[in-house]
Amino acid sequence: MRTERAIGLAVDTIGSYGREVIQGVMTFCHLNPHWVIAVEPRFWAYYDRTEPENWEVDGLIIQAYSTELIERVHASGTPAINVSNMDSPLAKLPTIVPDDLAIGQMAGEYLLSLQYRHFGYCAHGIYEFSRLRGRAFHETIAAGGRHAAECDTATEDLAVWLTAQPKPLAVFCCNDAWAHRLLTICRKCKFRVPDQVAVLGVDDDELLNTVGALPMSSISIPAAKIGFEAARMLEAMLDGTPPPLHRTLPPLSVVARATTRMASEDHPEVSEALQFIRTNVGKLLRVDDVMEHLSISRRSLERRFQKALGRSVGSEIRRAHLERAKQLLTHTTLSIEDVAAASGFVNATMLGVHFRRFVGEAPTAFRKRSSLDTSSQGNRR
Image 1 (cartoon, rainbow, N blue to C red):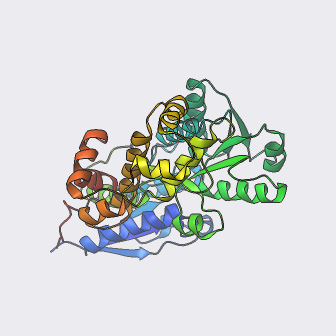
Image 2 (image 1 turned 120 degrees about the vertical axis):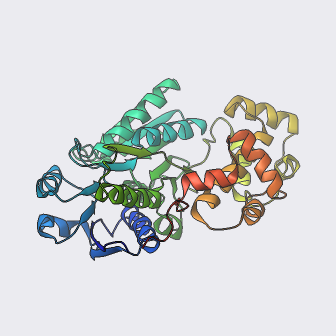
Image 3 (image 1 turned 30 degrees about the vertical axis):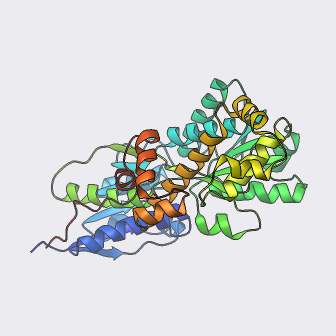
């Protein structure tokens, strides 16, 4: 019989990141019944008014919003794992967070692929995650031969900044919250999205990003897996094994929705074809299906695809199907057969063939790596 362990969760319940982290922690708890949540997660501001050092718990998982809270937790001597990348340095506590540099790079590569001439970054410079994402984004855009303007919302007016930028403009926002604020400004200033301003966020808050009139594109991150791994790290720590001081997990994929699409001023036929592929990505789709939708010869469209994207129409269809499969593998419990059917593949065998060839691993291996890995966590007593 294992001794019951009381765990405190100082994790934000408002944002999607915190909620998914909690989901991962609770999955660990269900697999390990000796874990009891003794202090429940609440709205983050609550933790600035309480004293976690006085909580009667064996361990803590915290989403630290300040160095001051880190100092208090560290001084208390309570074993703790941090799941926040808000402040720096946080070296006093073991930390597991998203890979912010990889997020910024993914955003830059995706927006460059849309063939925009002008780029921007909506930052909140007081936070470490924003600075890291911005650095990688700027480096990626520069490597593509372009420049990205930046608005630090901590010191600048976002509406004034946006109005001054040349259009069409592709804007990467440090998270979904700021991306939604940017969309609100676009509506007020009557900038058309995505024709004049393309918007990409981070966190992929599925509720907020899909319920509006304009579903928002976002980078998906493995928040639930971070929560599960944080719990596993804390368990090892309580058993006497020091966890790594800093660990990151890579982002999953860009979830493309209506707020981003290819710039149409230079390649209108390519933009229209991409929109058709996106709309029908869950179906078995062939190049001929795209051609039937457009008034252009296949040879001309292939030539324009190569010029704009550096790949063929068929390659783009395959890429879209694979991205759809990745999302389903990560965010659902659908069988591999159902994932194949819902992402436009003839069957699970063909999904596996394409996944191994272009992703470098089997769909099951990708699912294990990108979603909650509970295989080594049997019910402990």
